Image (cartoon, rainbow, N blue to C red; front, side, top):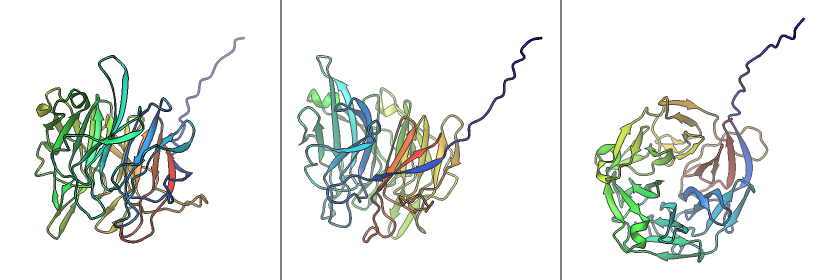
Length: 351
């Protein structure tokens, strides 16, 4: 006699589900659209947190508060110091670098967008965690911009696409915070979207970063009375010579084009969905696998804390990925001139 061991392999199915996590943050109201959102190492908590701020709850009703979400505590916290000038459709990002003495320095940068009168802005601001204050920094972003995208790779920020008044853009600029601190000109023109910024110009696109590559896609281009919605996706490969950076075409989303979507990365996978097209708001979401260059549809977005499985079409939401979770909140369902705005906050668990 002997003991025979039998091994059985089992595959655990993906969770692929949305979980209600309360309300989005806000002063007075949790609703907002057109906010800036990004993730970064928070020096207050020493953890990766999601940040959101600015945006609007209707024409002329702009926000200037800023918040961060700590997944370890499952809670939102208000950041001291409101953004100096309320606005919507701005760009924002966070960068952690080291100073000349080797100390870590973490700052948030926000710029562009539109003010309460609809003016497109080019001003640029920095939030210092050391002082808890915002200050305008010069020089401004090289052009007026609204509804653009921003991402960070290797402590360098890249900002582009968007619109100047009614002219859509496809060009990008690299921002070097170390040059700014050394009183050097921090903006450098880099390759435009698709290596042809005129052909691929757009506003209200999405961007996310996986490894040392960024991915930008979707959005819309307005020409006169015509609006084109994109379902494409491009991979950005930076180069130490910014002019030699490259864009590579990826597989397009397996659905129609959209704008004002939400995009984020979780566990080296990209997630894009929601938004709107010529037919109205959308509720579907998709996972992009950069290693196989393939898309997979995931569970539709839900809303309502009763867990009844109600599906919600949502546009203009914020979203970010931290560790193995995706987080989506706010947005609206309907004309941005009217209600209803959404103030809920949801967690997506892929696995």
